Length: 497
Image (cartoon, rainbow, N blue to C red; front, side, top):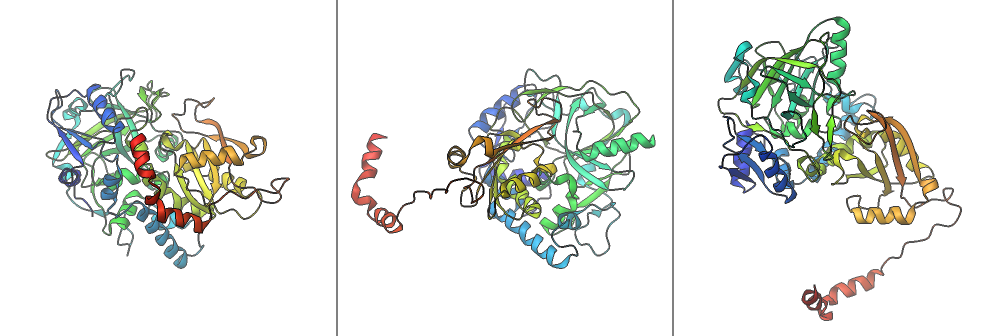
């Protein structure tokens, strides 16, 4: 199912008992975040705070922190269906595209310049008006203080928006890009843009800097919840997000032109912040904000966005993301991120069978990869392929296991690490780029990663014969299962435990 607005999705969640309205007055400074953190730890529902002190807009948190909500947002029956649909599309694309597997992803969901592709049913469609422009505030009418942006922790230096989607266009290629962005509020009309060194928007900024031109950009909040999930996928900056969404939903995404410049944004979003960045202007000190790991991070000097317009629905919802020590909404989206990531990884390493991002490792810092291993040294080949991908920048620890191991069973994975590794041989390292918020890296955005080969060793990888694993006799296991009630163990266990 697709949703015409975030309010439609919220209504459905409430009807299904997956959303709770908070009618007591709350404060956007610390209080909303504290409530949300407690609910997230209990795997609780989405929260809609209807009365925020000194504000008109209601705040929505914990929106996609749960399997049922994720499935509904994606319009599938199960999380596994996500990867299956992507793999089917990939197989169809390989069969019809020149060049086969290599580059299929970019060819299929690559970005255009926004002018529309002839015969493409999923190219975003430009319309004259949209719900996101029911209210328009321009120039001196702009007032960011009217937005209920949160300050989540006492150590944070400012209020911030963590759910924004940043829209930019390359002045050289006219390629449009949509990425996640965190922004800090400076004053009534200025934001600090906290993009990373690997983000496409930063590259566009540098292109404008070289040309001596100002950069137009737009930040959107809300809309179809599918966008919030896909924009956080590790490959999102390589595709046209809205063309991808159109293909997934089976209908093109409607877009409108911004009111203060020519960029296009989805017509169905809750709120749009339009603005200009002058690359020649002096940078300002970056704020201190919480990261997905629960630590505070002070950003480097950042560019300033001068907000030229705020447009929104007549009665918008303000979606907010609360980060801190896991679990939180981002870590609870991991099962979807895995399914979005797996087909992408299989394009560069076909032997990958499954992938798991350990739930309590923020931002995918620990990834478990199950592989179909058939020759000596294959784990090193897979690790090298993964380290060459932008999605792997955040993975500080990659554990490789055999395909018969479920990578989601953390206890079993660590048992294989304990049993199958000789550290001198099976722990190998690489240096390269890291996420901007990795405080443990010795240098900002540059550090090391380790791969752990926890697979069974083949001839040529180990000087001795590798032992067989102890396994139950199938007949005996079936007999015990059939007679389990006779043994009386359930009653004894229930009485004692």
